[in-house]
Image (cartoon, rainbow, N blue to C red; front, top):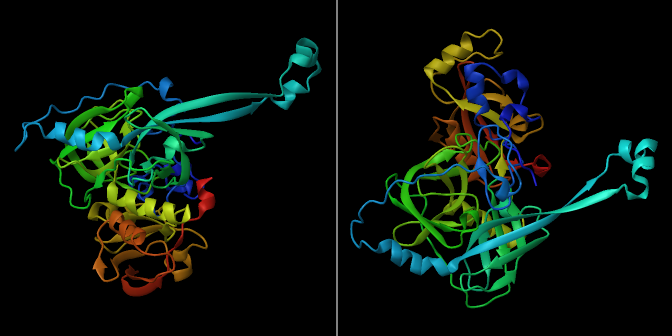
Length: 415
């Protein structure tokens, strides 16, 4: 498990010379070479800005999250009750535990003083068990369950408890740290299941209902609205993820992780995953379209291939252009006001092999205009490893057309 969210500038793939200027900070905020390892926490994922986080949910200093008061329903005033009745039986509690081994440093175990003082009582190795609780929801009647990867990451044992009180031993079929999605399987039949909705058409202001087990309080229901969509991982303080999050003011706390976010019809539109510590009414969920796409790969192969180019980039604006061209140390010069500026190209990456250079301005991808880095990342994520992407770019005022084949995101970066 990894328990620290790091700034992009601390990652070995990102050159530290890009720090401390406005355009460079902007460039560091979005990258297709996403950092590979996320903050891991059994049962509670707090997205924060450069904060150390405890592995144990019980040790978290969690500020109270105040959700917006429910508004009168446009139709049935009891629609939330109906949603809970419909979906509640398919929401589960997931308890995980892992054994952590720690050794006494050699300088102590081999020091004659400590040997004389402790004698044979000096332990060579100590074990401790870390436990956490999260949530999940059943997607098939034979026991396939979606949850967050950080809920089960590194777990020796996974126990799934359904609403009627039955407990099952869970097997992790696969997990993907880049999107924080995991699939757990239990041996059971005729289980209640959720209905999956459409997260691609969500709009701010729609109803949002969360069901989960926050802080060990099973089957807790909170309500609110969709506050925003398309929040980047950098915006919420988790730059190592590859998700465009749903933001909601429905109260989410540690233990809600992996539980469903529902619309007014009781369809799952997201998987609750993160909060910002100290904030109020700021919760984030993985869109169900993303979770479903990732889970299908996990179920089929046990792993996920993420296409990537290997560039660091930022959306161009006139102000950013001015900042770059006025900085003699930038090493770049920009003649364009619009498009996506390539700030850095990783060595031996698909982008480098295709001939993309730092200072290039991407104008189109597969014939579609691009105006921000998120649109480039989205297009790459929706492509296939080894497929061809047509890129139109501007280089020193000249139009250049290139074909690049996205590669598989290097898994060693997840370690």
